[in-house]
Length: 250
Image 1 (tube, one colour):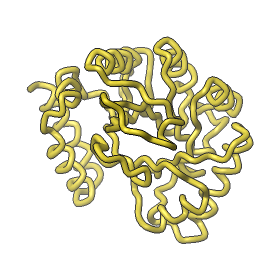
Image 2 (image 1 turned 120 degrees about the vertical axis):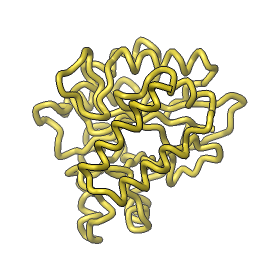
Image 3 (image 1 turned 60 degrees about the horizontal axis):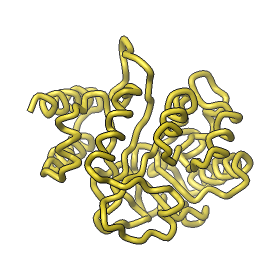
Image 4 (image 1 turned 90 degrees about the horizontal axis):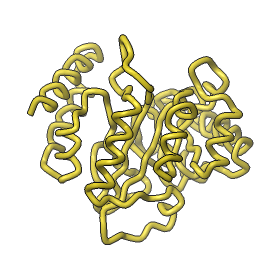
């Protein structure tokens, strides 16, 4: 089993108006501590390429969107725990305020972490036409190759939106591992569509423990995904917050 955690922004302290997927450094630190205390084994990204089942459940940390905190906050935390992670970077955002600089992205790679494809312009790729799909993959892949010296083989489509055309474009670009945003534990890993558990600021310790204990809460996430497809975005976002707040009180 491969338990993949997906983070977005990780901040040092509380913010006045944090986004849904923003967590604090202490939240992430405590979640890694809980993983270890539950007997989960950390997985290095390179181990995925020739994955062999382990006696114990394994976990992998991933970070989306290439924000500056990935270098300023996340990188030191990973070094304290001696963990390797995958950072999915929308390359058009490099060197912009609030995002990784090219030098910071290179430093992350040089310290043993993986930089993965996340489109060039951080666009939803399942609605792109064929030419645009190729352009998004080619430009992003070229920039990441220039930073790391290697062609990227990890990919996370923006928003987790994945269809046959996106899969085909990823394969043509040399991708070997694709992480979606579909909630799940990967008991029988499909490297072309790995499931994950996205972390958010409303996820309390009690609920995280239930996830680690494999207690049956996945149905709630499945309902949330259906609502995401059917509801207007504003209504869906309000529902999403209420669901996680209710879970945290259980």
